[in-house]
Length: 232
Image (cartoon, rainbow, N blue to C red; front, side, top):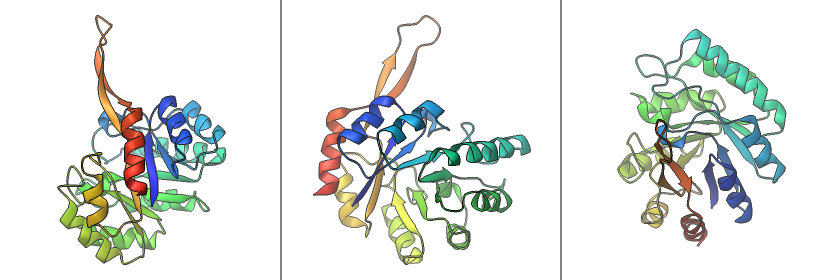
């Protein structure tokens, strides 16, 4: 079982190294689904010898990007691919929620030798079978998905269809709402050899008059338990 940890802090990265997870997906601002991480975060993971995938997502919200946002995505792709990472995690759609093929083709052409994962923008797609066929043709290696639902448990039946339709042409990685309470059910239900989770808890950062907020922080005990459950 390949375990991928979604990591957005130094603590998450250090825990991933401590418990010898197979891979990390680096991002920041987990509360909005993740955004492109800082260079420091990426260099930290690489310095600890972790197999590292980097999320490229310039902002929160939908996955329809303006021309300038597309250029930012390409600039970030070109920046991070030079650091020695193993792969990139990307996603872009049209206004009618189909794959943004021109941008995805440019990304693939600029990332020969790197693994490409299409992230949970896949769950927003209208016709996922057509999209999966296109991602296979583009030579993407992975799709991160909750089965067209907000979390994996609700999308279990769809995910079974995803695995059947993929038929080994592309890896399907279940992710989104994977918790210690449901990870065993997920892994026993789906024919998967990989799983994606963050093992975080919501923490209030409210020692401020103007900038109080809740953030998702890694929970050491939960991460350890989930790794053990996934590995058993």
